[in-house]
Length: 187
Image 1 (cartoon, rainbow, N blue to C red):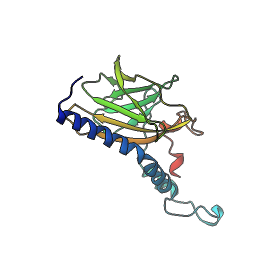
Image 2 (cartoon, rainbow, N blue to C red):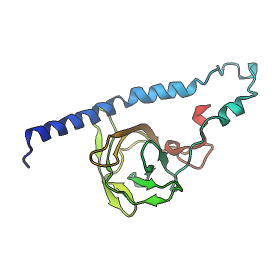
Image 3 (cartoon, rainbow, N blue to C red):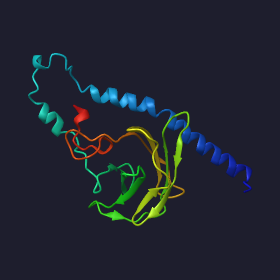
């Protein structure tokens, strides 16, 4: 296949940017974990301070919505999308309307980078019914880093979602940790 020089440069830049953002996911997730662990007071000597009013503090936070299929809802794009890891470790992306009903994909450009930073796995998607399904499975492991890149159209701005896809069962809600809606990590 023959590429024009400018098209090749653009592809090289896009691939480099995607890989660079993947390498920085560890720093982002560590910062998020640290930030969620500190919510204004120390937990040393739990009996020594009053938790009165903390219920109101947590009620003010926006409640997370669970996906209709048990996946994680991504709200940074329109339409919203449910990120679901199937039993075979394939990823299913279902676009949702305001009532959380599936809507057919309509020209979105999706890519996913996952796995080991020194040997990342690039995953593509194909249409299947009202969803997009990955052409290969996520790498092995119970918690794998994910960089999902979504463009609503080929010429639209890229939206990046970075998170750890933790496949452990949440101890307090019916979802796996990557899709948890109970907010137990926020406490």
